[in-house]
Each structure stands twice: as structure tokens, then as C-alpha cells.
Image (cartoon, rainbow, N blue to C red; front, side, top):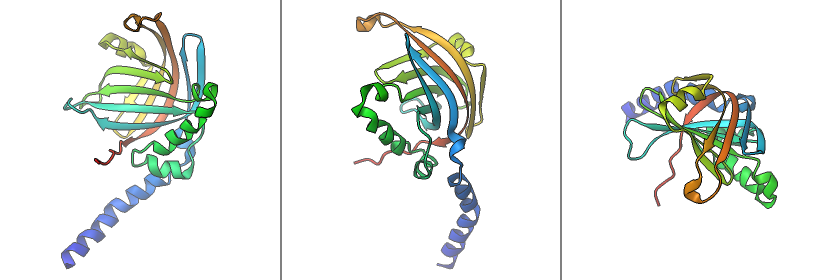
Length: 196
């Protein structure tokens, strides 16, 4: 019993300051400047949250996801985000569903497929109603970034570009996806939903 108490005290002493520091992030830590477009439809978003999670059935690879929103994070959002949970932010975004124009211009995701060395292999972009792999090949990935620095815990990303997405398989005209992103964010391991 004494050993258990000693272990708990040690863990609190070692882990406590780290958890406390993460939960005291300032909302401005998530501010960003980002513009996304599909053809002539353009949106500007001001907050972003970055999470990372292992890719199922792809050992050694992870998804680094950056979710963009038009509103700042509140204290309760930050408390969830530090555990990799963006549900509170997505709930706020979904409340915009009653106004389709607002809803369709208030969210974007950039998803990077990274290997164990944090090297990017593919980049996907999605906005409401549209999704495309905007950097499907190694040369596209190299051309996508002006700055990419990721150490597993912090992401610095600057990227401006466009990509013509082949939509023939859907029977619709090709679409031009555009982005202009400048961010400097903490990255949190994605919370996994509990099995039911």
C-alpha cells in the first residue's frame, strides 16, 4: 500500500506540471490565418486545432489533422483539445447548420499522412461538401510547403497553393482547390472514442 502511495505521489509530481501547463494554454495559441477555396467559393478561418493519431492498418503511419474554424476556442474547448478531442468545436460548428451559407463557409480540414519520421507522404483537404487529395505524389508534397516543421508536439506550417482535383469519376467537372495557411500550433494526440 505504501509503495502504491509513493508511486502515485511520484506520478503526480512528474506528470502534474505537464498536464497543468497544457491546460493553461491561452486561446490565442490556436489563432491562425487561413483561406480555403473550391473554384470561386472562398472562406477565411481564424482558429485551428491540430491532432495526430495512428493510422489503422498502416503501421508506422499517422494522420496529422488540422481542423480550422471561424471562431476562437473557449476555456472548455481548450480543456478538451489538450486530450485530442475536438467534439466541442465540432458541436459549435454544427450549430451553424441552420444557415447553410454560414455552415458551408465555416470549417476546413487539412490532413497530412506522416511516417514514423514525421515525413509527409500525402495531403488531403476538405471543406463542407468537397474533399480532395491535394498532394497525392512526392513531388506535389514537396511543392505544397513553404515551411513545414513538425517535431511530434508542435507544428509550424506555411503553405499557399492550388490543385486541380480530377472529379470525372463522380461525373462532375474538375474542381480547383486552393489554400493559403500560416500556422504555429501545439499538436495533441487524438482521443479515441470508446468501444460500445
